[in-house]
Image 1 (cartoon, helix red, strand yellow):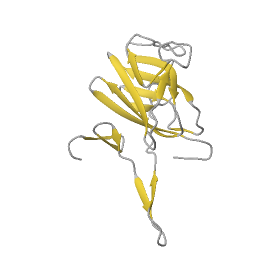
Image 2 (tube, one colour):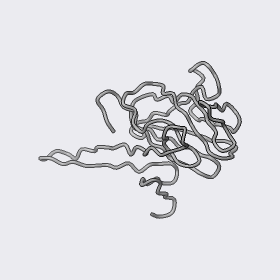
Image 3 (cartoon, one colour):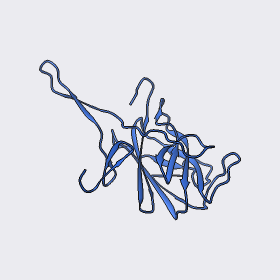
Image 4 (cartoon, helix red, strand yellow):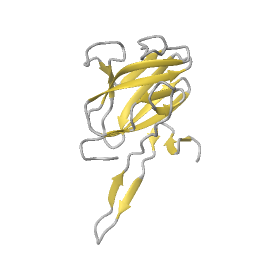
Length: 178
């Protein structure tokens, strides 16, 4: 790959956070080619012994499944961050549409309307201690809601210092698959 491209977990991501999405063309008896997009969902990976597998890679993971079978406007989601950091910034956009994901309740607020489209998490602020686990100094846990305006293929960009991770998740509606 030339300058500005990174390969992460078998998927190609171009600089600027744009994911390369596979495009397949089908031709039939005189008809124009039909464009079909697939959703290159991220593979779940182990995070810690006592936390469910997550999407992402060191130092930040989203604790969720790569495919949500049914679309709901809000999905309770955990985020795990490893190590010392000043802040983590997470944004989300729809790869097969024009939607932007929003985030709510990561700041200990009670009401869902307290939402933002750029989530910033700071070490030591709004952390939770799930189960019997202790937050910090190695792992930091956050819980809140990811808000999806519509079903589809969603890409999240997580920035921790100079590191950037791309996480792709499919949020479906009944009867659809990525």
